Image 1 (cartoon, rainbow, N blue to C red):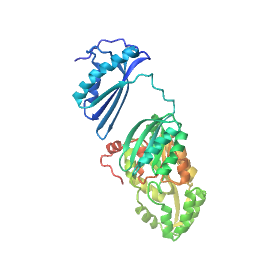
Image 2: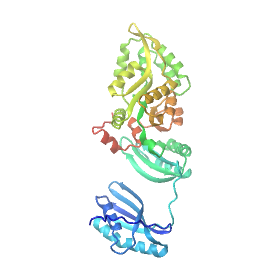
Image 3: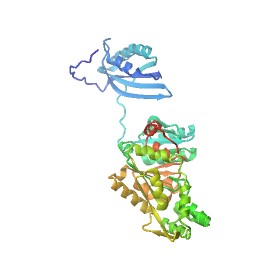
Image 4: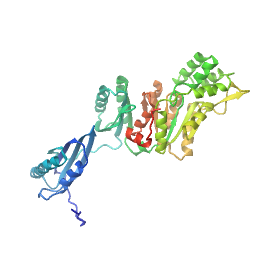
Length: 425
């Protein structure tokens, strides 16, 4: 039947208009939604015309749950509700028989839904491998405890981690993070909180720390082992990463321990580097999505520059070891990339690409990453020290770097679409 091109004057629905909820359940298949709304549009039976107020649909392992709220455009009160429910009761069996689903009809009268307070909607992302039921239960209880309501849940991924995104209204970010941090600690799951809005999916640049973030282990510890100073340097590194020692001071002390090492050792260490699982997937996916990707490290350019070239990164910043007569002198050349230097590097690269800081992401694990994490629009602590987890916007304790994609709101399907030959390497 052709659509009527004649303009029609819209009816004005009364605030007290009769409302009804249709709940459709069954195997998901093409045509269910089309058949339902075609029936609602057809008023040949003389029933009251309706308008659509709300639609929610989820598909869980091929099982459809579709909820539709409609309101009568004419009339109000018990008589109008009775007429509306009668009309929907007549069409429900026909729709059910036509597409093989169950259609339930019930009253939805009782006024307009409460509006969501501006600026108080958040995404709560649950991640784990496995993700235990008590993590979901604890998160739900924690959200309720701070006055929040779960409006929607969707699955983001089932590999390499299981992750879900809960859309929560009615609770503040600080209260949510505080409450859910306790749940995460008790259950071993990762829980991140982000404000709902366009800013979340507008990120365009990501900066990664290198040691214990992009790659496993600490490069300087590997160099120290070859110099026979491993234990001494490891103690200094741990103190610096935990925020117990000034990074610049600790860096000079550790580099001094490397004096006399032949430069060939740098090649050996670089060739032995092992990327964190998911690192290539993260970088390739974000590059396909238009991100600028790079590294900012407290390590050394002799290691990071070749690494950046191999991974096809857009930028890199690090310290430079001084070399004389084919050996390390135990000193550094140029400005030190310390805690403040990492934040400056992030700001510099963002400015070079014309990207506002609120559209940047930083990922790191140590105390010297804190300024960078706080400068970025989203700072993510990755398998980080406690002082870093407490101050970052989000914390991941999974061994897979591509779990960052779920914190950014990307589903596993979107990752696979971006990289057809996706790898977890």
